[in-house]
Image (cartoon, rainbow, N blue to C red; front, side, top):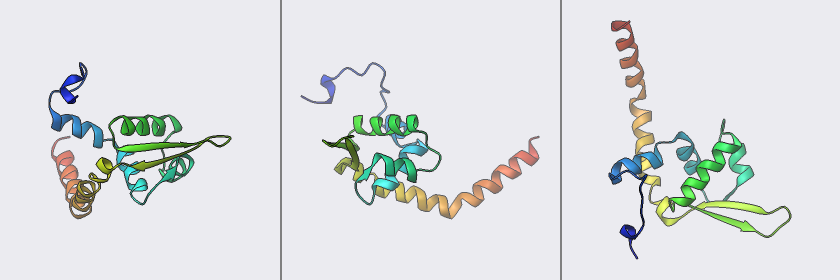
Amino acid sequence: MDIHDFPYENESPCHYRRALEVVSSKWTVLVFYELEDGKKRYSDLKRRVEGVTQKMLTQTLRQLERDGLVLRHVYPTVPPTVEYSLTPLGESLIEPMRTLHRWTEAHYDQVLLARKAFDRDNP
């Protein structure tokens, strides 16, 4: 079985576009940064990802699990303990995300200056 055996009527035919959809969510990036150091419980992620709602965190984790980037492990406790970790595929995205982070650190001030100049010249 390969990828072409699955119907994806709502998926973009462009792999690059779909990849950008996966990683362009700010919540995805913030969850990745938290999971970079290893497994985290849902409650830890909720506490550490500032501003994320329970609904959005759940949706983000489900999508990442569906995309094969995050592994969800449920422990049979009462109540159940749930931990999340990056899969090897997810770990392969850490370096590109770091590269984008370094670019942002180095150049975002220039972006802000360009925005101000544009707004000033285009009222």
